[in-house]
Image (cartoon, rainbow, N blue to C red; front, top):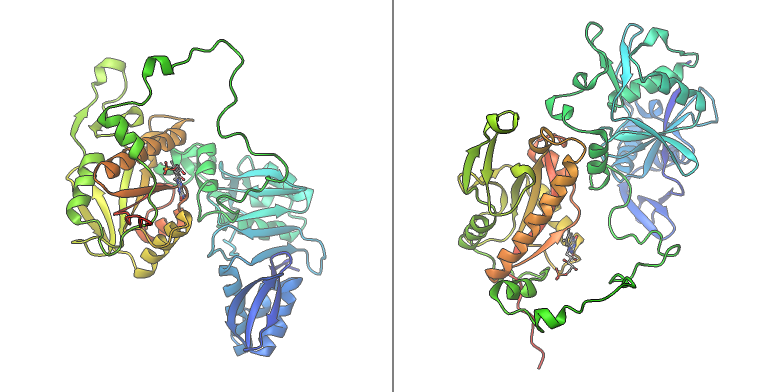
Length: 473
Ligand SMILES: Cc1cc2nc3c(=O)[nH]c(=O)nc-3n(C[C@H](O)[C@H](O)[C@H](O)COP(=O)(O)O)c2cc1C
């Protein structure tokens, strides 16, 4: 008998019928309204506390469709996990924790003759007192409840035919099909597949090192379910480090005697005046002319050139020169502008073509633009939306083609140089801006239809005309 996949409410949540007839999922004071459903649907859904088999609402009856709608709504709010258990078994063999908002357990069919291997991005690790199987490419992570399953997974470090695997429990095949759908497992071409780097995905994926793709997906929003941002998780365990490092005890040379009391040059003044602006004047927005000047000053391609292949034996590569420094002159960073309020430029998403100094419109729905703008406002804890949100995206392969192991860290350093360039240019022009530390890489991928490992956000900058502070009398 086949094992069952059942949807289960995230730990501690319960479902309640509200006085207005709607259903809410709640945990303590926290409550998520799910809309109106019938009482029979709510009664059925109570099984979500222990696990409601997906098959039980896969039919076409009115009740099944209603339960399906309720369960999918819970899934989109990130309130579900899925358990895989042996038929009538009480033990969770595996629990699936969605990492993408639209994850739904699907089985990609496998037959006895199929050759499979673990993805080189898959990893098994201890989390608390559990063993979890993860991959930055997967829409979900898998909590492994049975050590025998971990042993079978370990055997899949080499390509194996399904028929040769220990499938004593048919749940293993179910699990492998779920893993294949999540790209934690690969199906290889029986003729020439060896599970090597080139067999997995496209040329862009070939260039990613394991640690870089894990870092990218786990340090941004959109492809992981962990909380992101200032959570002060260990504040009660470890005190904060001091704002300024305590001095070393050695001999001191007091530099104030040499540098004078205050620096006195335009550049030093610009550095001192630079600050983050989170509150923008919506009655007096940035103009298209100012935006053009800002982009010209900070990001325009100044010249293009080619490396000399005879000098260091490296292949000939095309390069460009731009106003900010970039590791290896790669200039892998691209600017995508979410224009919310700019005089002379319609609301929308634009790519800055740095080579020809032009903005190119990209189709994006009003809801997607709103989602980007609201996330930026939230990240800045700002009273309103920025006038322009610049998403700095990386063409990852442009830099990883040359550098292994340090590629992603170089990209982040390049983002730092560009952010300071933006800050200084904005200050010099009498505009305001603020760096934003987190970005939703899944939202960007959906808007642009660019796969997240090909080109995606690595930083953001809010730009506009700052509101003049009220002078108190
Ligand atoms: C990499 C980076 C990420 C930042 N992320 C945020 C952010 O998400 N939200 C925010 O309000 N400010 C953000 N800031 C702005 C800092 O909070 C700010 O630079 C710092 O408080 C110093 O203030 P100042 O810029 O006004 O001198 C970020 C700055 C940098 C350099």
